Amino acid sequence: MVSQVAWLSFDQTQQQRTQLFLNALSDQGTVDELGTGNIRDLISNVLFPGHTVLHTRAKYLLFLPRDFSRLASKTVDALVDEGKKAEGRRIKTLRQRYEAEGLRNRGIIGYTTGSETKQLPSGSYWGLLRQLGVYRGTGSLWDYYRDLATHNAALAQRSILHSEEDDEQRAPSGLWAEYPNESPKYDGFSLSPDEAQWLQERFLDSDDSPEEERSLTTWLLEKGGKDSDREWISGLAYVWEHPLTDQFPARTAEVMWLGCDVDQLLFGARILYNYLCAHHRPDKGEAREALLDRYKNAMSEWRSEIDKDPPRPTLLTELDQWGQGRLGTIQASPAARLRWRTTLHFAQRWQQLVTSSADLLVDPNAHEHIAYRERTLKPGRARLAKPYDRLQGWGGDSGYSRLDYNWSPAARILDDIHLGLGTPRVEVVREDAAATEVNA
Image 1: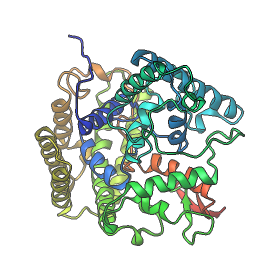
Image 2: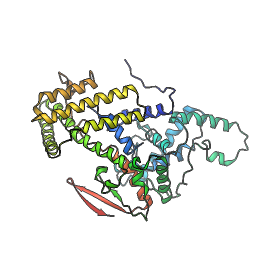
Image 3: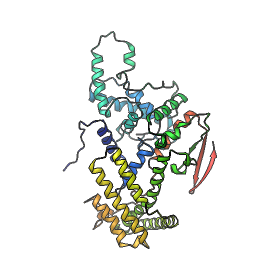
């Protein structure tokens, strides 16, 4: 059987959900072996709404409207091709700008494969463009191509005496917010003060939540500028390391700390999953032994942290109460609610095992809990299923990381904007897990 994904005639909300789903599938960094991604996604969307791990730099929010408002083709297929070429030219220009400075560290989407990359910036950023009101139309990128094709075809039928301005601004009036002019001197990802202020305003205007429920994105942007009395703290690994967490919007901060505590608990399950994969790897040898040592040490460190600061007994009850409310707010489907319940049951049983087990690495109940969860999520594809053929040559670190709830991509975009605004900044330099502050 061949699996296919096709575009259907969805409403605006359904289109956005589908695009986020496809983005997640295309992102090779998204590994959710134990099915707790719904916790991550619900919390991320409160702290940093619209951000995904596919986002790299803030200026894509200007590159895309500038490039896509000029598309002139008259059919959808031709516009798709023209759009890909425009993004390919932008990739080439960025490569030339940064080729001497290390492309991998600059956030260039498609720096190796150009316009043939699986996820072009337009697909990655379209949801955020809509959320910020940069793109004012409705629907997906495909809908934009369709509407623009109709507009361009009608424009072509007009008199040969049409004004030159029509050629310069192809997109229908009102589809794009009025954006700053591009600087004559190409400066790559750097934002001019006007560009940074424009993006700051787009983010602030997009958040109409009550003060205590505002996103951390907008709170961290609100007082940005060269005369700000609030410094921009650059280089934090997690947003809860920020020195002003006590000033964060109160309800949003509660969700942030809830996410921090839940991840602390569930990280042990991810360690055990990877340990079991290494343990059952059929090809014995030094690589397997190195992986076993890695996860044994990780489990020992995690256990010490948990013993020092045990998760409160009510943690998962608090999570469920908040999560159920959030699912109601976003009008989640029955399937999403069912996934939430099964995820919560997995987490509850895990917390029981953490409390009762002397050594999770040798506890058969803990082993079966992890293996059963994977088999349920991935029938026929689970690694922890006899005869363990899928573990032949397994390289380790599947979903083995702490969650930052999309702080990393949000911080990169915020950093770009604050640099453009000239916000006073403090850079946190992390060396061997120790952090030192350097005034910049």
